[in-house]
Image (cartoon, rainbow, N blue to C red; front, side, top):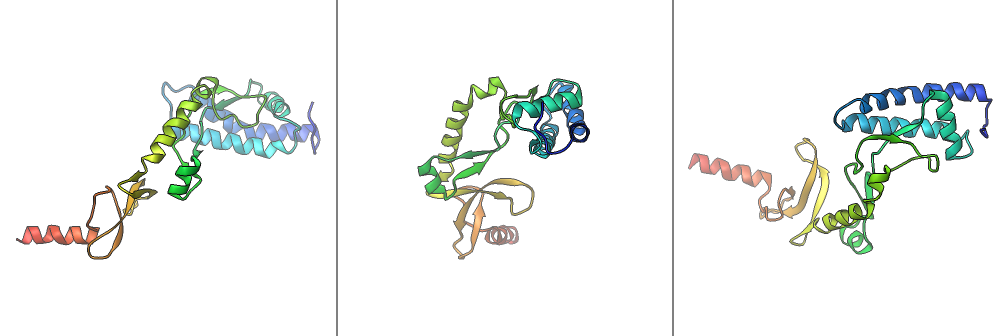
Length: 201
């Protein structure tokens, strides 16, 4: 059944070990009445790792699917995580200076049957049918990254509180800073000084 580099028994034992924690996470996610994206991401990451470990010992996605079926005793499942990066149109890529951008997972997050045709399934059937709409929405949002001639930066908040959109700007004092709005003109130091003057006045 399998084209393997090691004996079938050791391979089956390895498959049982690497897929066991994945099946546990998938079962936990499947039993929830809502999508827990933390569990969904973790399950998808561990499943990808498990498949990559075993992929070199199997001849095809179908063989890997069959090995997993034998190792776990149930029909293989996966998470519809979707894409986490998207490529930009050439003109947008030239404007923004990057070929692709990170995005939040755009799948439905549900546990769905895994594929026998491809090793890593990106979308379930329902979400795959809406891929064109997703790409168009992404391209529209990407063009909105340029506002008033300023490019919005996707980066860590200077306060360390998380990731967000910021604009490259320059204060009248000459200091360059990341602004939260395209019309923000004063750097944090000048804003603080202005507030202190108002209080003292």
